[in-house]
Length: 180
Image (cartoon, rainbow, N blue to C red; front, side, top):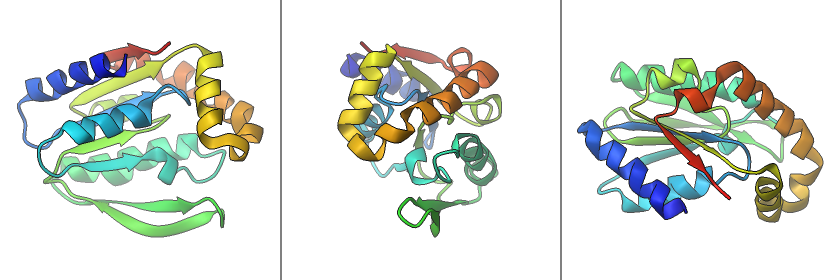
């Protein structure tokens, strides 16, 4: 399933014909965003940058804040030809950690729930929305993250629901992927 999706994303990237495209991959937890991003990067020729929103959400209530960080601190500067800068969130300390730079002269893949909004879509070259049945997504997410995520599943799902209702990322996506 993901290999067919990967081919669609690769074709869309090639179709843009630009040297340093920006790809946004959004979707609900457990939909396969990180896996698709990893597969895409493995297929890329040359260096490519990855920003996983799991690294920059400022805590369990941080989906909306991460959406703004993606747009304001990464995508806007990169589109101006400047470096984007974001801070990793240290989940253990529940505090910001070190800074990371995103170069404008390299391809960029950003993946995570909340990555795709009207503001970010306008600054991206390829946009992807992934979704699937809640039970399958939950099973995948909890098997991946286990007890660290289990108590926060509902809390996070409510933020995703707000994001989907407000931002309509499925309508902003050039590529829609439904996972079983």
